[in-house]
Amino acid sequence: MSKARKTWREKLEKEEGLPKIVDVPEKWQKRYGTGKMVMAKPLDVDALMRNIEKGKLATITQIRERLAKDYHADVTCPLTAGIFIRIAAEVAEEDLRDGKKQITPYWRVIRSDGGLNEKFPGGVEAQAERLKGEGHIVSSGRGKKLRVKDFEGALQKM
Image (cartoon, rainbow, N blue to C red; front, side, top):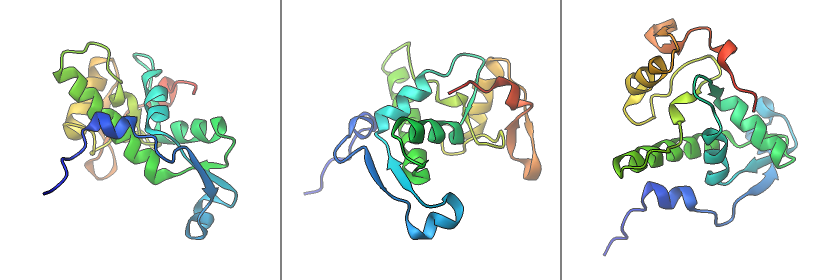
């Protein structure tokens, strides 16, 4: 008998063993340097995302830098941070389907180059529509990837 898959909410609320601070893995030291790396809790990532105001944006890098600062680490694990951002987005959509009005505004999280996130619910097209609805200009960048134009001016201080 197979186990039932966890809901996105169960994944968001999972805290066993987290946060965890480890040495930066040797294979990542060339990119991230040496020192301490934090694997934060999914709810910590969600909390930062919930604070992004309407009309503002935050990059994945900003979120990772804030988490590292909060945990007195040198860097935040890019893999777990990306996974937790996706989980928060999926929970927001579940909450919306359940009739909740206050959801995590995940569509306000962009890549450090202004690019949109293809792993968000509905893909880059859905994220672009929500961002346009908040006054951002989204256009095709290099390789036809969608990006927020002049996003730097809309970045929220984390």
